[in-house]
Image (cartoon, rainbow, N blue to C red):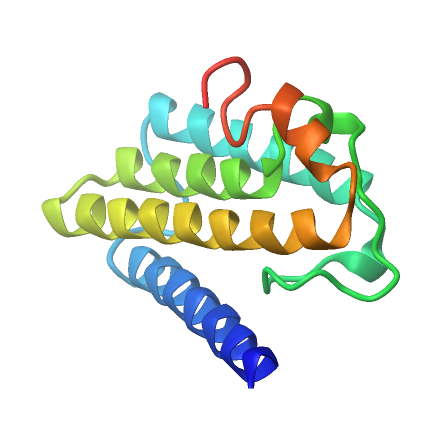
Amino acid sequence: MAQDANRLTSFLLVCMQFGCLGLLLVTGPLLPAGSAGRAVAALGLGLGGWAVATMPLRTLNAFPDVRAGASLVTEGPYRYVRHPMYTALLLLTLGLVLGYASPLRLIVWLVLAVNLWVKLTYEEALLARRFADYPAYQAVTARLIPFLL
């Protein structure tokens, strides 16, 4: 029963995430306008690429569930933040919002940010249960923004 609840939680969090992404994509251009939007989006793309290159491909997962055979990654961008892919996604989508701002797009971005915060909090509980050294890693590494958060 708990396994089914975990799957449902993961599914709902990912659905909300992709719903927000879809809304951002259909309510504005696919490429950010203006230098600020492009710079923030490029930073997000670069960080996301670095995070994906660091993470073993077999363990990549849109869902917060920890895959079988996963290991705790603490190098590359994971040395500075525990969730660089979430940070990258927030930066990329913020670049889209900055490039074509509207109240709707800002609200959708804020909903995405809250959803990702809930998702990473849930994921961290799963990681702490799976990896005995995760709490020590949490103590020395920021969640999303190096040296701040």
